[in-house]
Image (cartoon, rainbow, N blue to C red; front, side, top):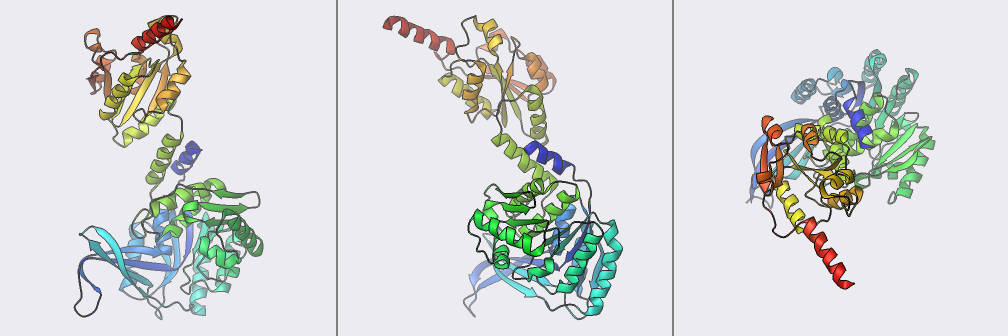
Length: 495
């Protein structure tokens, strides 16, 4: 599964997205909150810095840009300095602001958050101040927006509507956008507003309500996955939707289409801030569906992107590299540590791009004992990733004789896989590991101190590529051979 998702994310391309919605400016005022005001029982914020970020539909545009998409923006802003700031932010991420019209009868919607910094580094939101006019636009403004929308619809691969319930999506206007998109053969995705009249989303391709929004719209209080299934069916039938994706925070998402009714779980995250999670899900869904991905795979990627976003402070973007890193990490943790040499070399490429040091060792590890455990623990201290090349049954017989190994190669590999000090295991047939070492190209080659006189196989090669050889201390009296001999002796004496 992870290989397929990684391939999808790596090949999203540069889809063209027509994005309409409530474009907001987020302002973060950071300061030290070191004392209480003598005038009132409130903290005094000594301002340290200000930060401006795109919010609402503008946040979706930034998220899309981080995923490699080209975005055409359609919305209304005020005739003020905040509008200029927002335009510059959108242009800085490569968004096309051709469709941001000026409405001289309203301000640019702004959310200003005051953030106290405990000990100068731990941000805690103290207060949010919103500046907005959330009444509907004028008829003439809607006509202007529809004209711009019609000009761009043929150039878009997919359409997104981000509704923050700030007066932009009047019902007839919203239905007109949906109808035009469907007539042009484009999927149209909607992140609905809380407490909105969902009827205005009728005939869209897909909607992405969260648990609360879906509960209100469907009349089903969503506490379980079964509840989510009922709510999704009600919304899909009532609104004539191709897909309903209900985001369920730590439980992932529920997907309902004509062919799929499935809970798609996610990994529980350390949630820092949920701001912008819905924006990220909409952006990831648009980027993946525009690339021709099916709904299930798209939602799996949305789960990951949204999960990464909530671990960040405020509205924040998530890059393709971050999503791939997360997928690679999950693949490593969930998959078997036992790899073919080709699988292993591919996996090591990823570790190297993240500047992780590769440690290599090898051996028979027939009967695991304390000496082995301490040796492998020593290996782990030499770098980040430990690759253990395990002699196959065939090669053990060549080295140790026809009565060995006592445990076959799969059993030995399974036991070694349980050790935290071992990251990967590759089984080799040759009497020595030189060819495997050449393919792994380790930064560090580790063997026991007893190899000092015998000579370490692979030393010359590892040192020629800039690596080093380290000899590990030996635990006296501990070896597979001595353990086996002791067991034989006990067996003989018991007869």
